[in-house]
Length: 283
Image (cartoon, rainbow, N blue to C red; front, top):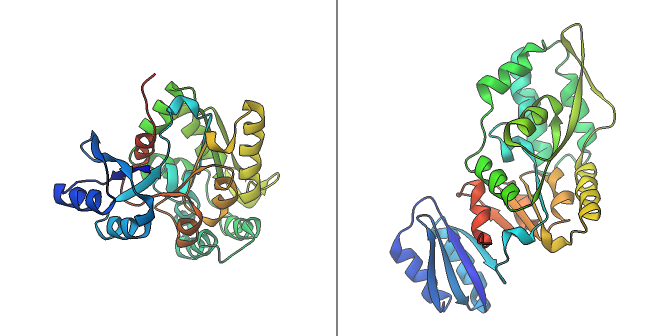
């Protein structure tokens, strides 16, 4: 028997009743206007339950048991298209009319079609040569927005003593600002080389890629003595998979198919703070 958390932007009571009956649920607990917990669910019907949830456009999560959020130790997050609504490199490229070319490489890398992330990043950054440094600030101020629920997810996690970690294959120009804005504990990304006020088309230092993301989670887990069951990791692209593999709560957020297939949980319609409904928040 398990708990089944159902979430959506809007609920139809009849849909919840149908899924509760299919799951032979012992009870229904409201968690808020957009979330319910079905108690005592029969997981032998999980395939049928998942199909019904997908058809009804519901996010679902089988949780057993429901832990206190304060028992978690790490929340690791990707930045582009996860914490925020854009791929920053694509928007920077727009400044020199190369967005389509760069975005095509980004998409292929996120789908896992380009296996070497460092190679794909090097190719994309090379196309940014000559972009004025001022374009980065324009992207941050005019194009970048937090995804729904991002601010509350980080705030509540920190209130419950969870260490927050932002690990990105993007750029420090953006991660540093988001770290300060949200109070994120640690942030790591790539540094764009800038000379005479323009991007050179190169990255400074070692590239933060898929394995680097995982290494930061492993390092922090060792420091905090955190088990896999105490780690939440959220991402959307193939380069997030090694990081997500370190977490029991691996979350595919609006993710590419290869990530949906390998993650334990997914949010396809609900905001990021829907993750909080998988835990008990009371002290």
